[in-house]
Length: 245
Image (cartoon, helix red, strand yellow):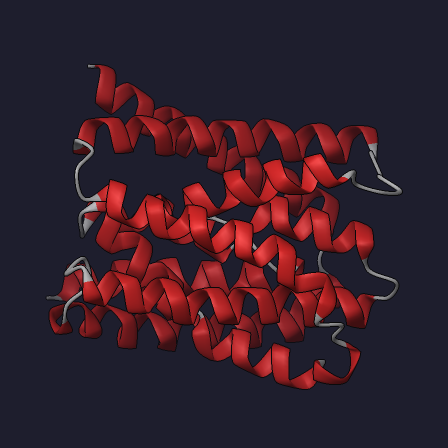
């Protein structure tokens, strides 16, 4: 009892903190810890629901800056792949899921370290890249609850203001949470027995978000970013090694 409560609180607290600082990334952090408590497909569902209160708050706050038309096409592509991925997650062996998760975490770590070191910025994203981003994000969201990074990059690139970006990405995640959570309950991946993890996680996520809001001005964000994604890379290597050994 004590052990899983501590893991959930700590994981959600760190996830809420990262989400509060970067605007996304909670799923990445949660999926480092949750597979030690639950099967990976259940971990993805718990991770998604844990942050729902924070997502609702941000989406509502920036609702006036939202431009719905920019969400429709990428969301349709994304959600179709995510639904397929949710079904697929029930039939793929756990070892392969862990290997995929490990590869994803390592790739994300290297990607963000490269982006930060070289200060890479994009002025536009071609349509075909948007389609690829949506397909990849939908697949890994359905599998692991990690669909944010590429979609965040997409919306950041096409947005004309910080408010528009936050409104777009958080509304996107909110609608996604509704569809994917419904699918996970309908297919039996999530059950009422998972609610205890979600409720405890919400407490940690709220605390983490509050801490982020209070201390973000005092943090060296560049160093913190390197530490976070370096840790994600190490966690990915851990999953790869435990699968291969």
